[in-house]
Length: 300
Ligand code: GLY
Image (cartoon, rainbow, N blue to C red):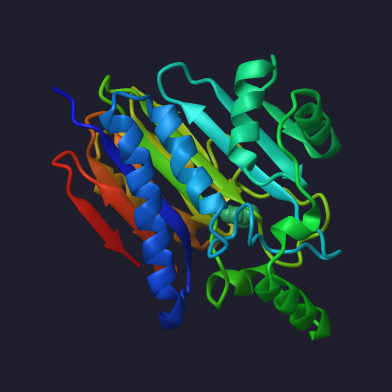
């Protein structure tokens, strides 16, 4: 019999001690939400969406409410969701005024003949299907407004700083359901002070997430510009296909990110047998997982 498994992450960066509790709580809640669905016989895809929604709604994380502001003080978000059974996926990039971008990504997958919609087109699609929208102010929290003002005072700001300094993290989840199907999903507000229209790794298939029942499901977090160069999620799956176990594949992928392009980030993995792996090269990565024995693990 197959045991359901879920892993979530709340971003890879230098999480300061005072924020550890909030991250662990948010990851725990998200993992439990997903597992509730899996235990009832629900699909991995539903579990992943529910876990990610929980973190998008939690302003501790850089996704949905609480997202970073771009250089113009706007919130533009990216998200992807992928079904490991069919390789169907849906993605949205640079969307505004949406509280749960991963659910819009799923609608792209299920209600259009496309796999990715960006910017204005994605927002028009949301309106067309009656997807709930919100005001920009509903996504902005005081902490991010303050950060925006501080950044604007600086003469120079480099994205690289984000992952070795005090910032927030992208969120993601991977799961295996009772039928052995895998799914992966990732959602983010991107990086602070990004140029309007900047799209990171998150919404790009094989970079921010990948799921294939033949290898595994992977969600990534970190510095998008570096993650895209090594297609981190698909590279992790490639290591699984080569016979490395879930933990080895995660470690090898992050090492490759670091060595090849000097990148920063982390990955969470569930392989096709339900084995779990995770690795990161940032000071910390917030995560939670519930293994095949039903045991909850938390970490930063
Ligand atoms: N990994 C999130 C981003 O760079 O947009």
